[in-house]
Length: 270
Image (cartoon, rainbow, N blue to C red; front, side, top):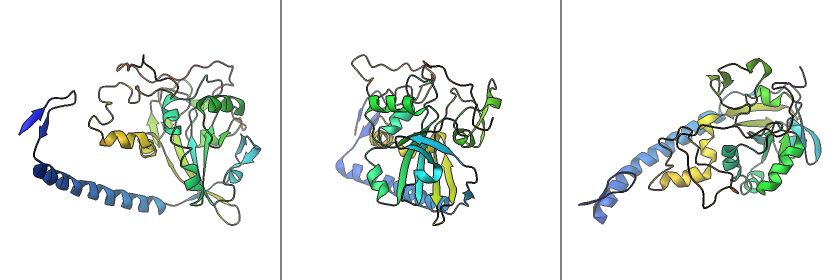
């Protein structure tokens, strides 16, 4: 039996029969994980719902829209909360990393009675400028002037300004930006009543990133160990180049604000 040194660690090199035995043993673990994931998904679907009583207004390419309008003709709505605040020069690189996966799936979701939409706090004109740069086609709405982002934990409230911790992912945590990522799910019944069924944040969004799933089966994995900020390696897809390098000590830096923005936490009910 030989060993091969890599920049990951030393690996055993074995015969084909030994490799098959090891693979089949590990397959047991993978099948166990799959069954656990199926069970967690079943339990998620059985969680209680809450009726959405407040009216939320959005602006999209088609004009003004309510939360119920975002469903279109379907009964299920998935909203990705994209970190793009008022006046930001560009969207969050990590959210952009996720968004690169969206366009190809929307037609499949639509044919399973699911509408997918992206919502950000920035005004629509700023959203459209960045969307055009990235070449994305998915439906993207502005929640500017609405309580939506505040109620779903993804924008800094006025009372949180200057505080060391904010309410995010159902607990008080430190967060380095005025906007936060998340995913929220809604159901609309035959009488057009809307219910909030699920929201997830932070590492709960991992499963949305197809690239991560591919990296997880590669020999080096995600290769994020030792990074101060887990996604410090991520760039907007138009920013990778021959000069690409990762600063392992870099923390998260909110995109530059290039236009005047309203006071943080200002909303339609203030």
